[in-house]
Amino acid sequence: MSESVFHKLAESAELEEGKGRPFELEGHRIALVRHEGTVYALDDLCPHADASIAFGPVENGCIACPWHFAEFRLETGEVLSGPAVRDIRTYLVEEKDGEVGICLEKNAAGELRKSAPEEETFS
Ligand code: FES
View (cartoon, rainbow, N blue to C red):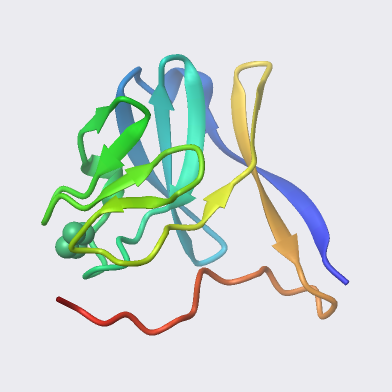
């Protein structure tokens, strides 16, 4: 059985429109991205070769990896173009009272759920 836990990650004012920013939470690299007023949270780890996607360009509901320009949908983490072939995990975001938090899940042992563990085949 898993349990959802919200963790404060940033002040709202730290997140500029149209840009991402990297954070770390309990060993997870998390990118927070503000796009058209909404904050999105994704693993800050491109599944192609581990680049930080937080520094990629943001456009039309997507963020592109700054290294080889794989594109991901901000809302779902779905990969839209290669060379990455795997989606990025996304997190629920709560923004209120000037603070931004994300929801991580704990497993029955009280450990935070890790990012997608599958092996990646580089192309
Ligand atoms: S590291 Fe992201 S596309 Fe290559």
